[in-house]
Length: 329
Image (cartoon, rainbow, N blue to C red):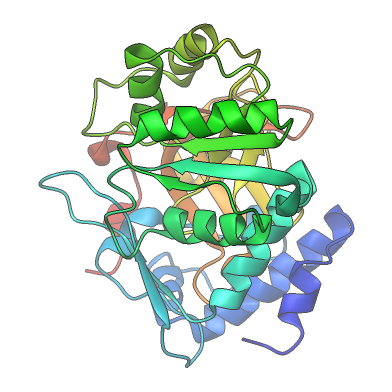
């Protein structure tokens, strides 16, 4: 990584400094990331053709399934792997600097929620905790350690213990954050329907292959009713990123200053939709991903609001992630 990038990434003050740094990182990755360089070559786009961030090509996230995507010469110190579904290959994110990930997820949490030490943090992540290479588990473990509480931690299937502890924490007037994958929170809501009024409940997605898919709006409606809470918070991240966006309700996410969402035309993967509220593919600029690829075209559908927040509305089918035929075989 170029000297000084880390300090600049986490000290972005405005859109102008974001744009300037994004262009610098694009040029750096175009020169020092073989997969991204080959991708640009396949598109017949040279580094000099790109004059602004709206012209930067976004690497389809599918490439993380069968390529080691690294910028620079450093070897990976950790390989994060997606959960995947039976019959599908998983994405693998080769991370060369865990410090960047830790600074990113810690900084974003503080930006939206304050110090982790202010909370008792409980994680309900069954199936994820069984995998050694889950980026979500790594992040939650880091935040739980930063909470410096003798309470909290991971709960797998022992929800009775979790609810007993929550009653105690509520009686002690502690600030409680319950983070869970969607299917686990839904199971808890439907089977036990505990009163969690006063608890911040945050879902992180994760229904694929576990239960019938429902919309985020439907999920939140069930959780709010069963848990007796006014809002459900959400975290939006993925294995291939080092940054997360957060929603404090209504399914509208906001990014930390080093992350930006752009919406691409679903019929033309190289064109962006400039008008707000138009639905298309979610492209992500994640400057913390400086040692991998900071410009990723996801398989998610969404739209950006005039306020800068964004919604995630669903996913493309695998056959609809257009542009993959432009990639390296």
